[in-house]
Each structure stands twice: as C-alpha cells, then as structure tokens.
Length: 369
Ligand SMILES: Cc1cc2nc3c(=O)[nH]c(=O)nc-3n(C[C@H](O)[C@H](O)[C@H](O)COP(=O)(O)OP(=O)(O)OC[C@H]3O[C@@H](n4cnc5c(N)ncnc54)[C@H](O)[C@@H]3O)c2cc1C
Picture (cartoon, rainbow, N blue to C red):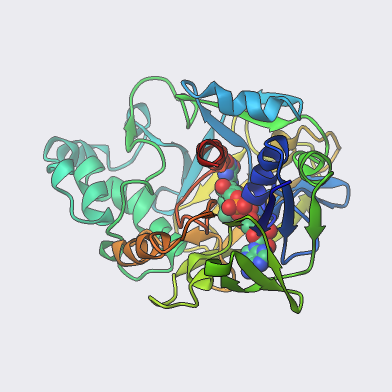
C-alpha cells in the first residue's frame, strides 16, 4: 500500500486524507494542534457551538459536486448569507454589498450620485483604493471600505494592496432587492451540533494515522520526508498544507499573513441581529471587523445568544496578504515542489481560499496521483 504524509490536519489536510484513503493510500496526518479541523473546528462556549470566525460552505451553483462531496458525510442545511455593515459616519447599519436602493437613505446622497456619475475606469485601477473609488466613488468608499480594509489588512494605506482582484467581497454595488450576499452560490452548514467535527474525527481520521500536537518543523522533499515530534516521517507522497515559506526554510523570505483574535460574548436574548441578517461588518474606528451571531449559522436553540467578535492581529496566520510581492514569492515557492510532493490549502497555496475551493483543489490533486 502506498503511503502519504500530510503536513497539517486542518480542513484541507482532512479532505485530502479522506480522498487518499479512498484511492488506496495509507495517510499520516501530522497536526500541530490538539485537534483536527484547523479553522473549521467547532468548539463550545457555555453550550453554544462556534468556530473561530464563521465557516459556512459557499458552493458555486455550477460546481454542485462540491456540495455533494460534503453531503455524503454530513446533513447539510442550506442558508442565505445576508450581512450588514455599520457605517460610523451615518451612525447606522446598511446592507452589504452596498445596495443602490439604500443610497437614497444616506444623508449625502446627492454627493454620492454625483460621484457615481463621474466614476473612473475600474479596469484601469492599479490598487485596491483605486478599484473601489472607481467602482463606487470616494464617499461610499470612505463609508464602507476605507477604514475597514486598513483594519482588515493592518495597512496604513489601501494603495499598498495591489493584488485586489479577489479581496473585495462580492460586487461593489447591487441593484434591486436586498438579495443575499453571495447570490450565485449555494451556502450550507452541517445540521450536526458540532458541524464539521465528525467529518474530521471519524470520516477522515479513521483508518488514518493521526499525530496531534506535533508541529512539522522541517521538510526534506527530495527524500519525501518531514521532521516532526523528534523524528523523520517519510511517504511515497508528501502533501503540505502548512505555510509555504516553512517548507523551503524561508529561502525566498517569509510570507506575511494577518490573523484574528476572537472574542466571545453571550447576550441575554434569543436573537440580536434583525432577520435575515447574522453577519455584521464594522467599517469604522472600532478595533473589530466582524461580529457574527452564531446560533443563526449553527441552528443552535437557546434563550441566550452567542456573538463572535473578530479583531485583526499579526499573532497568528489566517489570511494571506493581498500584495503582489508576497503572492509572487508564494508562486516561486510552489514551483520548487519536486515529483510526488504537493501543496494544497489556504497556507499551502497562499490564497484566500474558502472550503469549496479547497475541496476543488483536492479533487484536482487526486486526478494527478
Ligand atoms: C476568520 C475566517 C473565517 C472563514 N470563514 C469561511 C467561511 O465562512 N466559509 C468558507 O468556505 N471558508 C471560510 N474561511 C476559510 C476556510 O476556513 C479555509 O478555506 C480552510 O480552513 C482551509 O483549510 P486549511 O487546512 O488550508 O487551513 P486551516 O483550516 O487553517 O488548517 C491548517 C492546519 O494546519 C496546521 N498547521 C499549520 N502549520 C503546521 C505545521 N508546521 N505542522 C503541522 N500542522 C500545521 C494548523 O494547526 C491547522 O490545523 C474562513 C477563514 C477565516 C480565517
């Protein structure tokens, strides 16, 4: 039987382990943390299930094989993703993405209309700030995007963000009804109280060797082995899901990330956010970027409610930096993978990938094995 070493037991390490088992491999997952699932692991706080930041699955309607993949293992419930943004200047919430109908409710609507009429060429935008000002004008950019983005990426100037194609959330302006955030996607969440945990702990881990609390500290891909827990582990194939710079001993320099501190807050009422919203973005000077009401995502029933508050930090690695220099560096790292060694996942490809993209990448990788 062929063997596989998987560095990292987050969502991507678990998906690839499951697929490898079905292809007849004997996989070993080597995970730094105490549990499998990485960022998509569900924990409990006073009975409330939560993940660090929301982790619902967003599947393109023309790629339902991704949904079908998860639905083989979990009872998936369909959701709609409606979100609000708090705009400090107006001291109120608006739906997000920005809806043309709501511009009429803004105190400075005449100025906004004049700016929309005079918009520049979006295609010619050289950075994130230009992209947004050209898309929605200066005033809407200042209300919804300017400060939010500086907080989100820990930058002083949004012109620093030059690889912006993937980072604006959805489209800049929406017409018509206040439709769901991700209109062209099917959005789902497992019905199980612990969401994806049984997928990680049972479907993926059973029949697989799993080493927890064991960070991989070195890679020797020429010999198809990794160093973890004081010894080398080798396989017929090696699959990385950890940060690319670690794999190649920082030979092109470190890759930058931004992370999250996560605060949990229980409030004494059944529901805080008005229907149908459960995501709130904060676009002003407050330190947090997003507040999520979890029970509306998880389906948990209780007389109280849990809010998760996300504060950007450089202490951990959650979001690859949307800057060309780092993305080019990541591409150079990816070119170094020798035969039988592969890389998938958010850190493994240094991309703002969601779970659906990870599943697609794992399918594609399986085609090559
Ligand atoms: C705040 C936030 C919210 C998100 N919300 C959504 C959402 O709603 N929907 C969606 O589809 N996607 C969402 N995502 C993205 C989604 O979580 C990722 O696509 C998914 O987690 C990627 O899986 P991964 O295994 O690559 O990374 P992770 O899940 O982060 O797992 C990486 C794993 O590798 C381990 N590891 C790292 N280094 C080492 C090492 N040296 N040795 C051993 N193990 C190591 C880590 O401990 C971790 O377990 C969100 C991401 C964030 C940060």
